[in-house]
Image (cartoon, rainbow, N blue to C red):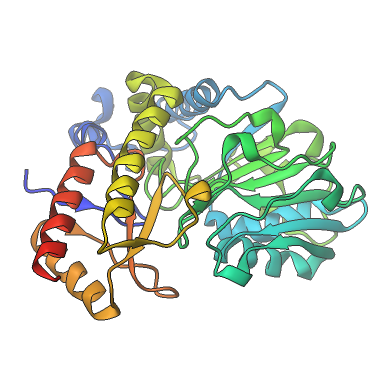
Amino acid sequence: MNRIYNFSAGPSVLPVSVLEKAANELVNYQDQGLSVMEMSHRSAAYDEIHQEAIALLRKLMNIPDNYEVLFLTGGASTQFAMVPLNLMTKNHKADYLITGSWANKAYQQAKEYGDVRIVASSKDQNFTYIPKTTAADYRKEADYIHICTNNTIYGTRIKPDQVPQVDGVPLVADMSSNILSEEYDVNKFGLIYAGTQKNMAPAGLTVAIIRKDLIGPAQDKTPIMLQYKTHVDSNSLYNTPPTYNIYMLKLVLEWLEELGGIPAMEAINKEKAQKLYQYIDESPFYKGTARPEDRSLMNVPFLTPSPELDAKFIEGAKKRGLENLKGHRSVGGIRASIYNAMPIEGIDTLIDYMAQFAKDNK
């Protein structure tokens, strides 16, 4: 196969074995005589896919019984509204930790629905670090506290052992870009949501994991489709769900289970990230942009000595089969997104190219 190494921040790389299995089952799924794409979401064959995907996610993430797993649409961006509409219903207050562009967008949307406060922000240093907070920094009367655990643009993350202490206030986390990459304790969160296009499945599906006691009446005039209760009551089948994406999610979860689950994936991810960060840190030519103690395992932004060389680097990389290394349009530079499905060989190939490029452009 003439496949590239795809370092895109999303839609991102998928496991080759998953793609091959999906290709093999594309036209005729398990002798059903049709594709999953064509299958009724009310059929027994699809129901089996749906339930298996939920069960696998519960097993891999150790999701307790007092949480619901929902399959939604609209991406994380729709959750920016759905979260306050459903959770900011008692005191109409929420606190937000701003660690990047997506956290800020969530905050801006939530302001439309209540008293929303920024607890801390790393904007003062271009989001290159994670602000440190304590439980005393958050309002006890807040209906929820919102964080983003990984920042794709700036390459920072909130580590599992650094999840904010919130003294019983429901903690909401956007985990779109690092879900399934390392072990987080679901019990620490009231709600986790994630667009699947980074680590889980193709773009178009959103997963939400919500504690049952948070499922209740939404704010007045909240559309039916934006109420969590609607999707809980219908097992995520209120309308036609993105059935093929859910099937692909199931295949990815099976792949992850065969690999050894999230602990095994976390070890691989740390090896990949450490190898790339070590090369950057030891090179006089390249410079990482995120603080070392807050670096992401999934997104590695870095710079050459000049914007001109950044552009040259990206063009040269394409000729080596290293694609989508351009930094986000808002910050420029170079960014290697090394999600779960990026093999270690991709990191080695990138480092080999980086070494040659540095040598040729001293």
